[in-house]
Image (cartoon, rainbow, N blue to C red):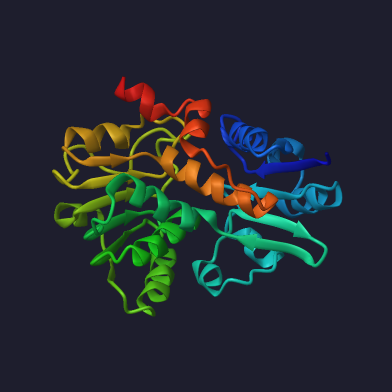
Length: 280
C-alpha cells in the first residue's frame, strides 16, 4: 500500500491535533497516512518555499493555518467561485495539473454549527476577526441564513473589504461596528487567535458578553479558553473550536484521499474528544 504523505504549514502549530486526526482517519479507512508539521520560521524558509518543497518532496497535500491562509491563495488554483470570494484557503492538494486550493474551514463550520444547534438560525451575529478563518466563518453564516453579521476588527480596511464581499450576496445585513455591538448580538464568534497557545486573552472585555445567546470560539488549543469561560458565565450555548477542527479535518481528509471515515463517533472518541471529558 503506498504511503499517503500529508502535512500542516503554520507558525504556531506544535500543539496541533491534525496529525492525530489524519493518521487515525487513515487507520479507519485502511490507508497508510503520515502527517508532518512544517513551521517556516523554525525552518528558516519563506512560506512559498516550504509549500513548493512539500510538493516537490511528494506530499499528497497540506493543510494551511495562521498566518498563511490568505497568502496561499495566489499560489494555487481554486476552482470553486465561493472559495475565490472567501479569499483564503486552508487545504492544498497537489495534483499533476498543479496545486489546488480548498477551504474546509467554511464547510467545517457549517457542519459543526448544525451538529450542535440543529436547524436553529444564527440570528444577529457579532463576528470578531475578519482574517482568514473569519472570512470562512462569515460565508458559513451566510449559508446558515444569519439575519445580520456585524464585523468587529481593529483592521478597518480588512473588515471593510469583507463587508463589501459579503454584501454582494444580499442574503444578510452586514455592517462594521465596535465591540459595543455585542450588546445586541444573538451569537458571538471569536475568529481571532486570542486564547490560542501563545496568544493569551480574549477579544471580549470582561462584562460585555451578551446573555443567553450562542458563542463559537475558533480556537481549540486549548479548549478551555477565556472566551469560553466568558460565554458560559453569560449562559451562552457554546460551540468549541474543536468541533470546527474535527469537521474541517474530515473534509480535508476526503479531499486528500477520496475517503471519508464511516464511524465519526468512534474517531471522535479515539481523538479524545474534549467535549466528553468536560461533560464527565
